[in-house]
Length: 203
Length: 242
Image 1 (cartoon, each protein chain N blue to C red):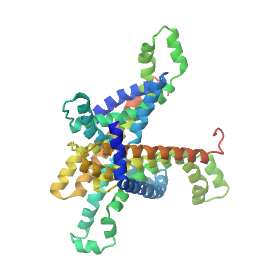
Image 2 (image 1 turned 90 degrees about the horizontal axis):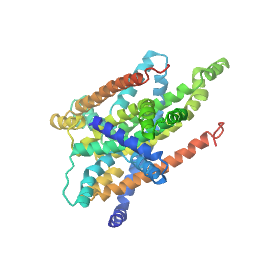
Image 3 (image 1 turned 90 degrees about the vertical axis):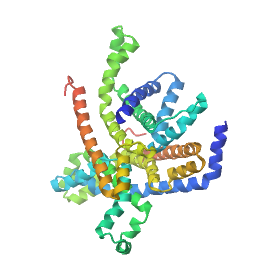
Image 4 (image 1 turned 120 degrees about the horizontal axis):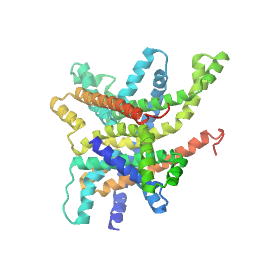
């Protein structure tokens, strides 16, 4: 779940970033509007609006009944939020690339797409990894909110176990500790990724 | 266009409810951020302390409350704390009712406040720790050379500087907390989100959620503007600040 949302969200975030730095004022406004909107709304509210609102919207557009399951709704909602935050991270990384490199690439006869792919993208990934790692940890914790629309994830399982055993402290405590463990493991993984992305760079 | 008239109708019909929900959310933000900040001060000092016995518990607290979702923490406190206390009193509800804990355990708002305060304390302590690290070591040594004691140095030199450095991050925490109040609705509190849920369950009209989304947007925009001005005001003497 968090994997899907992070992948989709990163792609969408990159596109939003491109919109934000584009020369067209319309695209820029759309990019900033989109990102600010989803950064300002509570995650829970976005999940509910996507879960209940999106099927209605699609129905109004297509005239057909559309069903969206809790998993898909959760992934869409969390991707939107992740992309809003990550677009801001990518924008910072884009600015962090020295202008001279792009000019040198242009002087070597590379086209804009080639420059994006060979010069900019690899460096943006390296520069934005630490912040993306933080966003990943936030996303991981947000997945618990999808329990509200009934998806059987960790939190929902804890709720079900509690309603049977009447022992809330143990089960919510266990759920909390599991999240802590996942967080610690992922931050260790993220640090390894950061080290790898910096290989070949003078310390 | 029909959509906008429905939206306007939503505000016209339910403005009282929505306002009381907003009020509850803001009260929760103010109380939990204030208390959380007070708790964060000793924790951040503990995190950057030289003694292992102070550093260890402070760091453990910070890892646990930042590593698990606030949603789980709210459930843990809301359902778990009363159950655990009941266990402590040997399953005797009557005795628990007589105890000093009853006012806390019988109030959903206070229980949610406890969870939010613990969470805020952990995050704000981390912000403050960053601020503490930014205070130049030379300043503290100079103060020491002037004959100031540890607490005087903390109070006069380190904390004010750390505070100003951490301020933008702390303000972000306040905005995050406001967004997080939506979680309080999952344990029956009628905050803004809870009011939205109630209207939605009566009307099955998603416009209810859109209506509260607009309110969240406006409040967050106002907060961000206000905090930005405050930050500029507090750093007006620094070089390079306009």
